[in-house]
Length: 211
Image 1: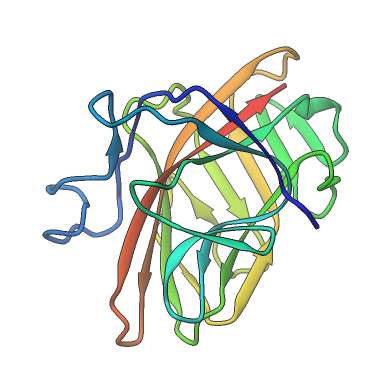
Image 2: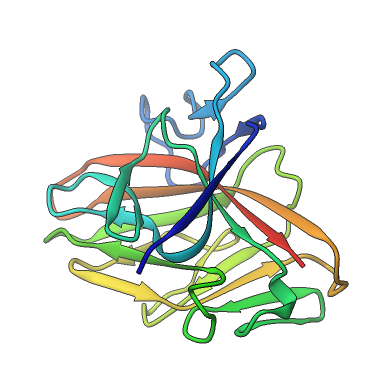
């Protein structure tokens, strides 16, 4: 299935992290990955439909994201963001008590991104998500799936087992179910290899929900 992308003007973005601190890895107490006005301007890539994995680990233990059959490694050149347009009028999207739920098994991926997690390596990975410093939206974000634990901005890191590929429900606390609003969540995703692998990476990735 194809993934639909578009471009838009760049916007400042900063990341933060809540996984256990470690020196020299871009976590708390050290330099973090950030996009600032000092960097060359470039257009961001909007992912508006199709299959994607916000965290993707390939068989060579490279960490990045999957867009359809394409793998995009994390780093300074990563410029993707997920955009859910006209979300409340789409199948599989509901809002109750100010919480927008995107059902990965109920949406039409031809109209919205179907965002999951993938670990194609032979080692488990510890993964985490946090709200980036300065994010316009600070409500909690969570992802529940067949994994034993929920990945959440207010919870601990969870394990993504080897050879695991999961999709599920995303929940965004926005505080309102009104139509015609735009919610921008700037998030920091992290992944760290377990079982003697030991590699680590983090990436700021934005989710935009237009109700």
